Length: 109
Image 1: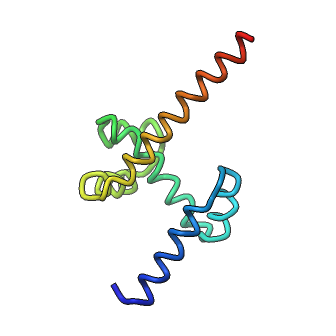
Image 2: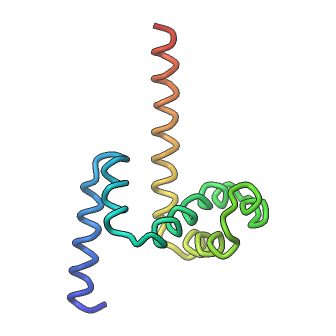
């Protein structure tokens, strides 16, 4: 990787790491991505959870309407990637579990 390219990547990832909530993420990525890029990213991400659960491509396609090509791209990053999908998936599971606990507690009180 060229030095300028590395600096650009580092700057991008640093900026992403500063996003504080879903609304900020939405605003940032809507500004960063073209109208075609954002849906492509969303489709790939939508295929990750079922892929991690071991579901077949066709089942994922039928369940999510994500193209088999996008599912294949996500699968490639899962099998040959650096574990980034798994890290974020686990964090989301934890966040959702905490949210359920908090909602359950507030309904009791």
